[in-house]
Structures are given as structure tokens and as C-alpha cells.
Length: 481
Image (cartoon, rainbow, N blue to C red; front, side, top):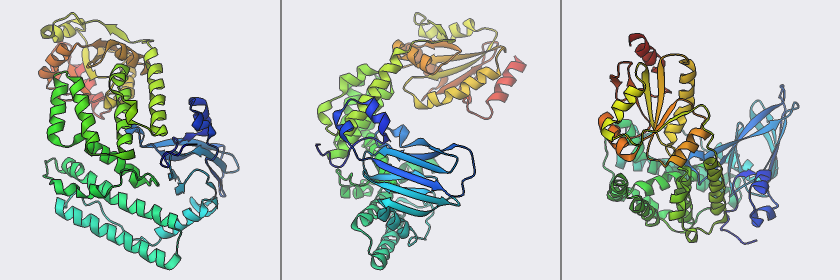
């Protein structure tokens, strides 16, 4: 079988992989990872146990939770294939695994008391190293300036490396264990250095000046370093991808300007260049895969096929992830059963009259407006809370109005169907949305607006459905109308 720089196949159950993909290389992979365990003091009925695996492609699934059965005697078994050597997170601590490992755990009082089998030496050595590193470090992004933060990271890394040196002198661990530990230490530093600029800004609500020299540490990064992916390595890759998408700022501003003008082609091309200008090797392939994957998350296959370039990606795992997401997107788009949703067509109404038409259509009711789009993750995460609100106010004089925007009608209808939305739905034209955005000062979605029974705008920026205050706010509108 052809070697793909030690990056093999995705972290999924073998059964799922063999059924869900036609790639012959995947089915020819014989060695996976087996983790068996016995909870000695387990006294319960049949239940499940959560194991977490990392996914470098999908930013919304950095760590995926897979549930495995625990029988009434406290025994469990995990049988999976890894995309690369990585940490597996369990309720009893991390395990460091590669395909071909077979571990057995004895667990008592919530801790692993015995770890044996193929791969046990590595895990026991890393567990032993952890006892050498006792010093705790506080999160320093709250109070350290840029220069001082760099020195703090250097100091922290020095303490960890000193601990590793002492451990090597005392215990003579295997070279593989040392490489794993170094991966953990190095990428912890680089991850936090990439997080500092945006995290510091978020906490202090001010724009801090970060000199270009701050990012000099990235020159040390090997773009083909995928031999071991510790949790910090995974987080670094996500942070580095974010950095590539946002820098340089003048390119980001230009891309956003293209987007505001409706020049999607130029915006996408510029974002892609921002990625390729800073990357090479497997990292470039990964980041382009993430970029294409994000297009599919927006459910627009037309844009995906217009800009996807398969010649830029050779890693089989990345190609497999894109194919899987494409299949899921096609299944999503085939569903047009909008159920209880009431679809209204306001496309012929001039933008200057759109608000008046909405108020007249739902006159006499409190109108809770939700501006959303199918590609907007935060919008979708509010839908379960919105459904609960509708159930709570069922039979009351309140209209839950969903104003879709920046979407084709096909994708919009499929999103309503797949999210099983009810309520009233209108797909705004671009000019209608632009007019309402200016009227309500919408700078991003989701955005919510509240209008009372008399058609008066109560709030141009209302609370979200997930807000702890929204029930009282809506009840107050109903009682005072």
C-alpha cells in the first residue's frame, strides 16, 4: 500500500469506514487500535463510556466523542482505526495510540491502575513523565504584555524541558516516548503564542499591537510534521489555520470588501492565496482541505465545484473527508420536506417596503424576528432554543419569523427541512437584506429584532433564544401590547 507520510485514515469505527467508503486502500488496512478495559469497582447497569478522538479537518469537530458500551460486569472494548498516531481521551486519562496497538486497562476508583498490552510501554513511560512535571502555570493572557508573554512562554517551556531532561536521566525512556513528550511541549508553546493576540483582545476589548516579529516562532514549524499529533499539536493546527485566514490584515480587509460587493470569486481566490502563501507540504494540503470543507458546510455545492482543485491535495485521508462531506451535503439538499414551516414569498416587494409589509402581514401579534443563513453555525445552534420558545408560547399572539438571507432558495428550503423548523419563513433578496441591515444596524448574524403588536420596533438588537432573559422579555411584550 502506498505510504502517505504517516497520515492514514480518519478516526472512525472500522465498520463505519468499510461501509461508508469505497476506497480500496481503506479496506486493505488491517491493523487498527484495540482498547479493552475492566472497571473493577463498577456496580451498575449496562451503560456507555465516552472516548474522544481528534479531527484536524473540521473545525467544528476538533474532538469527536464516540460512545462505547460498558456491560454489567464493567468490561468495555474500543475497536477503531486512527488517521495518525494521536492521543485518545478517556474519562480515566489520555492514551497515546498508533494503529497496531492493543491496550488493556484495569480501572479502579476512577484511575488506571494497570495498563498492559502492545503500546503499553509508551503509555506507561509518558504517565511516568507526568509525575516529573508538577509545577502549574496560570493563564497569563489577562495581564502580560506581548513581550512579557513571549518570555513567560519561554520560561514555561524551559521548565517542561528540564523535567524531561531529569526524566531521561533517571528512567532512560524509549525514543518514541521522548518524541511524543517533545511534541506535547513544543506545540503547547506555539498554540498559546497563536492564541495570545486574539484572546488578549477579547478579554480586554482593545486592539493590541502585535509586531510581525512576534510570529517568528512559526519559522521553526516543519510543515510536514505529522508523525505524532498530541492534543496541543491539534490545537496548534487549528490556531495556525485561523492565523492564515486572518493575516495579513490588508488582504483580509480586501477579501471582505470583495464579499460585500458580491464578488465571491475574488474573495475566495484571495482567501486561498492567504493560505498557500504561508504554508507548504502536508500543512498546506490540510488547510486547503479545511477551506474546501468549509464551503461544503455552507451546503453550496456549486461554489465548491467552481473552486475545488483536487490537484492541490494528494493525502488520501483529506480526499476521503471531502468526499464524505460532499455525500452528506447532497443528502441534505435532497430533503425538501419543510413540514410545519409556513413559507412566504416576499421576493417581489421593494426593499423600501419590506418592513411595512412584514408588520402588516403579522399585525396584531408580537413579532420575534430571526435573521439567519444556512451557512451560519451560530444561527443553527440557536434553533433548538427557538423551538422551545415556540412550544412555550404555543397559542399565544406571537409570531416567530425567520428571515433567511445570503442563500439560494434551494439551500434555504433544505435547511428549513433538515432543521425541522416551524414558524413563518421568508427568504430575503440581497437588496431587502441590505436595507434591513442598515435599518437595524446588523453587523453579523444571527441577529434578532422584536416588534410589538402595534408594529413598533421594541428592540433593534433583541436577545437570542438561548438568553436567560428572553422569556421575560417576550412575556412583557405580550402583556403590554
